[in-house]
Length: 462
View 1: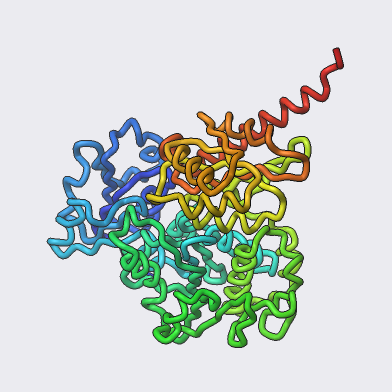
View 2: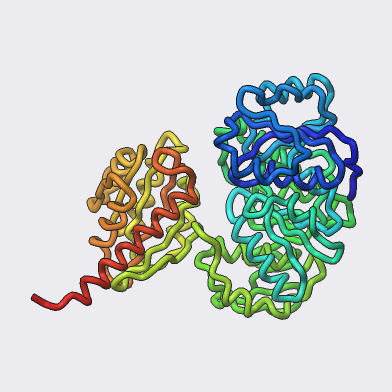
């Protein structure tokens, strides 16, 4: 779909670190739109983003933010902007459409879009699909809610390309005509209830991914998750399901220990390099997207055997004296920690804690007591996690003041062949800018530990 934006007054809200507002302004200004960018931060805080804007763009920042929103023909918001803020209410009251950046990206795109959502696994599946397509000889541009904004990809994509995008509920709740050629929902679990008013609102936002599809499009769905099965009757797109249980109607499934796409074996499940049953789901979903696009899966086996995953998601960051350190900083809920613990067979020293998203860590404490050798806690939720684990019978519980200290404490309690796992079960904002920053600090702490061990081994005996 292409839309003529020439002469349109487009109001872009948000110049955050992910670059969505900047990319939107750049793409629309090139197409002759009269673009205004607004952000409540002061200009010095946004200097880098402002410098990258075209000279034709009008700025309303700091105290001037939102001053001219009522004059817009269209308002485009970045993913982090809550849709109910007062300036957006003013715009809607005047009948001005308010949409997400992915909506505008779709209106610009000449290439087909594969949109991937779900509570967990989006980033891994999106990155893996991009690699699978590239290894199959297709030009895949990968981004969306990870990396490069979808609008920046759509701005430069050719007709023969494939746009592969992770999309979030925050983006999907603000679409109008967004219609991906392939729409995938990996799973659905409670999350983001700090943004959405309730679980039903979160569900409705996610499922909008299928809203504008037609029988010419494809819907990729996890057939093993009961909560997603009612969607099947309402789909207008052609269903390409995936299933580890071997559902006969699945386009991609596991049968007898083999991953099968259609009637063709791809590879043994054991050949997938990524750890855990959840990552088998991610691999099946990516393959189902390939099948839906009509791309042959003949080279997929080597890709699945080589793909190491993405940062902060069961990322193996180093081995120190036989202890493997794994960074799962993205695990911001107890449910995500449960998945991580199930994915690792070795004995685990778990590092957990941060800003809590749940009121009760009792169930997680019981799981930790059953599954881990020792627990190191930190952050605001540290005492509650420690109490829950001890109440469930785990005696080896240590509390750390910093992540560096937690890494050292985990190493001291680990033996060769064991795993020190950062899987926090909490948000990062009590100690870090975001979960990516937490992952960076973890990697740095492991590297420092590795260097100290190397120096210790190299030192001459006294």
